[in-house]
Image (cartoon, rainbow, N blue to C red; front, side):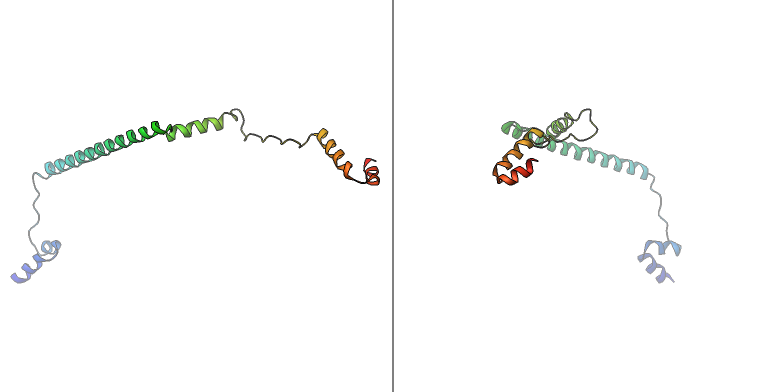
Length: 132
């Protein structure tokens, strides 16, 4: 029987409890240790965030140097200007702006001149028929 109990303790932890083995004792300082662990995790997270914020600030300064060198604008500024330009013509309109009518479309005077041009190249009898 003693041998079976020793084999049981070597197995999964629950088997020892089922056979009447020792239960884990509660550590009196467990709450304090857990609190210290949580504080260490918070501190590590803050250090990590500070590290990446510093790296991003360095990258942004490099980006700004490139922008200044080549006369570029920030992406947000360029997008804001493009959006403002798109809204400007249609400020009071709920629909998209109408396209301009191309020259020659809808002008009756020009249509007559085109008709006159065509008539010049037609033979005489056809010209007479079309004039009527």
